Image (cartoon, rainbow, N blue to C red; front, side):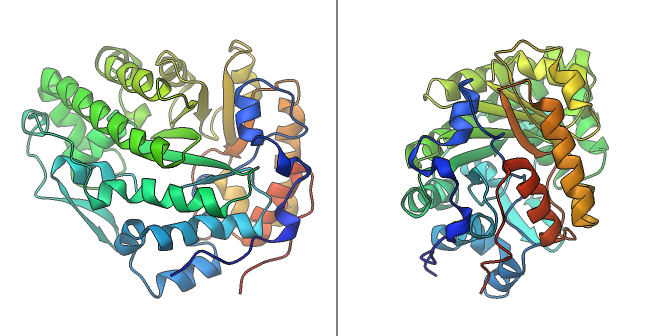
Length: 363
């Protein structure tokens, strides 16, 4: 499967010959529109992605750099997005620690996972096997395929979110089992977070070596611990992780689904940018932060299930409200859902970047 289809000409903005707009905004340089990309911008809402999945399973897609490159490129062909994010799965680093992941119809599961925080925290060497190196190899392909103005984002789960998945065994609304195990043995849970921080840092180093220009950390379940426990247990490991990744010479953005207090705690890790979910008033929250902090977000993904005009209006309002802040990256407050309408995605992106969107470049 070869990612050789040409990118549509209308997707190329005037800054094509310059440094990616995303990097410029992260550095505080002037930009003529907020750099724009979307969580899960590649995926099941796109008919071309569904066609791809008819030929390959999700697990095979994540492990096949050529196929993952194709999935990554699909939204770039459709919309004038300023960044791509490598197609992979949040739980891939577990494979480098000896855990087996099964990708089924109801999301990934950890097979024969740990029964306690102590068992999960047992020392284990992180091994860069084929599954772990696949995103880095995909990024090498993307470096050849993408226009120069489109930033390449590598990503991983943050230690807390990964720890909850590992102890729960699969995704869950409140991760009650995992939180109970954490509360029962806080010392082992803290050790597990440090172990995962080291593994994720090594995993992201591979992606940076492969060509990632920015790193995105997803802490989708970071708000499930109260701030006092977050500071005591999570913050030390998070700081360790961010320091190791920033030493690679790339900016780091942290997405946290939780309260403003949680977001401020995540900022204490030393990240370059903080991203929040749609339940926060982003302009109001940003006004409380130093000018040197980049903020990212935070449109409601539900807008993309409705009329294009409504999505565009919300995007224009956010762009207007955030205009005084140069360090702003436009995004959603969580990932695109499979029910999203491509025409509403197009309208939202057009309103943010101020450029026309091609109707479609799908075959």
